[in-house]
Image 1: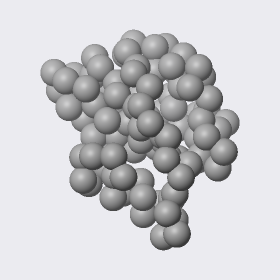
Image 2 (image 1 turned 30 degrees about the horizontal axis):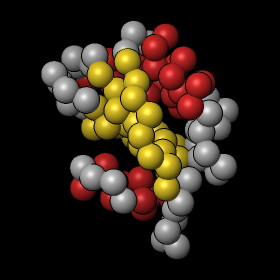
Image 3 (image 1 turned 60 degrees about the horizontal axis):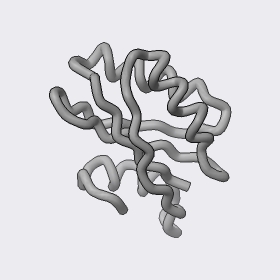
Image 4 (image 1 turned 45 degrees about the vertical axis):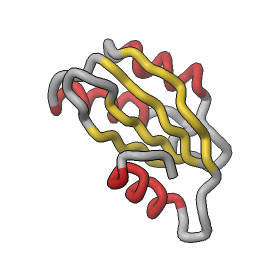
Length: 95
């Protein structure tokens, strides 16, 4: 499953690296990617087998000093989760 979030408060690549390190450390997260948007909402896309624990994601994001908005959860298409993750980030929209 792919879950989209919006994270605010990131101002640089170091912020992005910290965010990704925190969410990738969660047990339910298999893959994570984000597209840094300075001064706006950064798109965070997480891939997991059975869905992510939104409470744990919120805690990880907030412990890094950022704010989280829960987005949508999608089932991966037949092409696999890695393709969906890359396509979602590249397109800048929900898959």
